[in-house]
Length: 242
Image 1: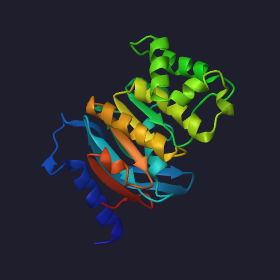
Image 2 (image 1 turned 90 degrees about the vertical axis):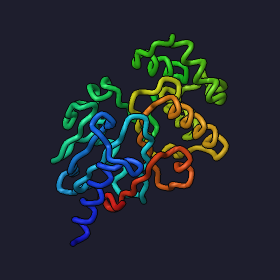
Image 3 (image 1 turned 90 degrees about the horizontal axis):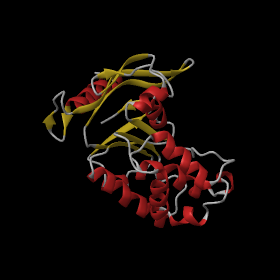
Image 4 (image 1 turned 30 degrees about the vertical axis):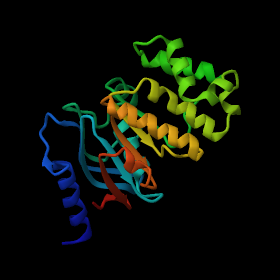
């Protein structure tokens, strides 16, 4: 059996088994089947099959260039698969526009900061929470963001473009931590954050996980991610290897 066959078979097993028990359709929130992704002629993902059940925190780890970011992008609709299917809550979302996927309950925090650099910290948060249509008031959500990240409160009138990389990362994380979607994808949570701040954020992630938010966490290193992950998969050169 060649390497591609082993990788594909292992991926199928990963899709069918959750923590040693065969999964049922009712448990599955997201299912990828035989997904291939290309950037022009370059293939970035090969025959990816995996499932994530409701309430699970799946960690996907691997070296730079392994395909982790591409995985987050194809699920969230930033790129479309060449072949295969992506099913969320029993609906095929393959090729669906990112806005429509987001409205269905999937949100991505990318590896790079996602802020409006010409607007203040407060105005960024207003836009985030206004767009989300959350049940809380926008002002209450902003105050909760400041409780999570006191540094943002200190910088509330600064333009987002004036913030450090770590501060911008806090700003992009604030919305998801205050108003988490049904399925949250975070690419490189630890990127740009000091150890003390990162420790606080992992605690917040544990909290929203305990409240039932399903998550896909993508990281290069797996030491910290294992404190919250219910399961871990490894990507290597665009293929699942465990």
